[in-house]
Image 1 (cartoon, rainbow, N blue to C red):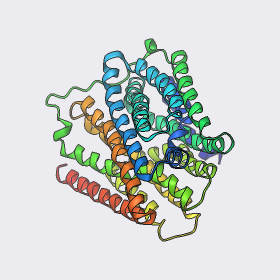
Image 2 (tube, one colour; image 1 turned 120 degrees about the vertical axis):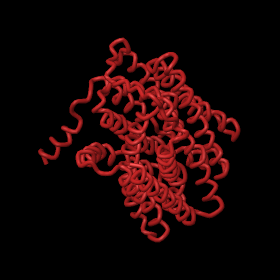
Image 3 (cartoon, rainbow, N blue to C red; image 1 turned 45 degrees about the vertical axis):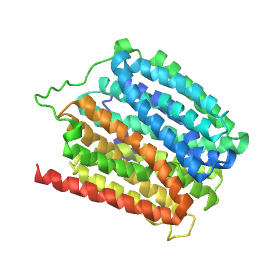
Image 4 (cartoon, rainbow, N blue to C red; image 1 turned 90 degrees about the horizontal axis):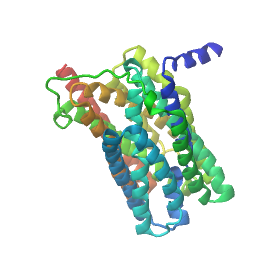
Length: 401
């Protein structure tokens, strides 16, 4: 056991102090992300919106995320990532506190849009800062550490959030989310001094840079990850409703179940990344396996009525996530070296926001018209389509070296 623990610790060695500070601030920020996992339940149970209306609110969530990522990238280039992160934390904090006072459909759509616009401006600034503070050989592990902080925070958030709902009601979630965002902004000022930034990234110049919009390899990669993300997002909108209405779980039980995802990622993702990277596994094959596991997490639900199957569903989904997101990001960064890196990574980041726009809404509309079991089968089919796209990418890669 001690040897295993020592090996686990070794996977984190060599990362800069600033990366650890960024990860710590991100952990505090994401630990307060208690509203999002319960948002669809809150909107139906507390506010009384229909599934279709919830779908449109979640579309506004995605639109705000898309514009927030684009705005955050633009502002990062103009005023610096440090100021963007601070502004995003503070404004997002007050936004979470304010959103609880909206109770009608249209104001909620506008409020959620503005909230995610402010909160998601943080994302591009964070990854620019991570790049500035990380050595080239440590970039994949630095990204993984940030993801671990995000997922550990988001595993704590739902678990604590479920308990808060039981004892204090939904209002407590909005206050805690707001306060932790503001705390993250304050810690950013005290712990991460931008004047001490270490520029460790290698500048890469390409004589004839590729455009990401004309790069077939990159567009196929984006398409595969986009399909994966649309299916994956069902765990944050339609699935919590399924847990409550079909499996009859309480909010506390839902929080613990969703927290399992983040805890598994915290324990196993970094060793996963190091294991596959050290053996030089084909990353595209790992993506195909990952989306296959995600498909399996849905297809088992309509055919096995046992309530405990949802735990296995979460495990399949989590292993798929640990394969697709780190290695998909690594492939995108690697490909970006052949062209305009800023344009490549901006398009890659916005890909997730576009998935938010359509993924939640499609899922909510589907359960409203088809029911849960039919929706899980449709979602499985979409995931299989993603496997075909990535398989074609693998063949395209071999054909074109």
